[in-house]
Length: 87
Image 1 (cartoon, rainbow, N blue to C red):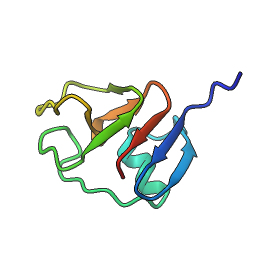
Image 2: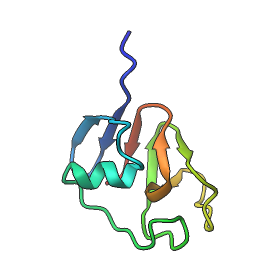
Image 3: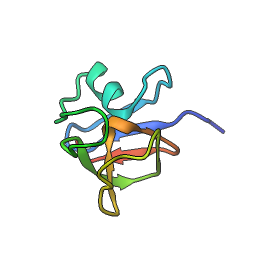
């Protein structure tokens, strides 16, 4: 059984294997050519909030702005499981 975590960016139709060398989902997306909105990169502005279509994420620190259920701040999260984001 494979232990690799897959990140799917639904709008672009791209699925990639998560690389833990990246600090956050936002960093990972940017380095792989997925364009996403962002502002502060610290969980304060919510510009990077996306629909979390499926999967679970872990917050690296408590964000200033907590997103609604089914959403995540990509600037301060990493995947816990396979994840599909609306990006």
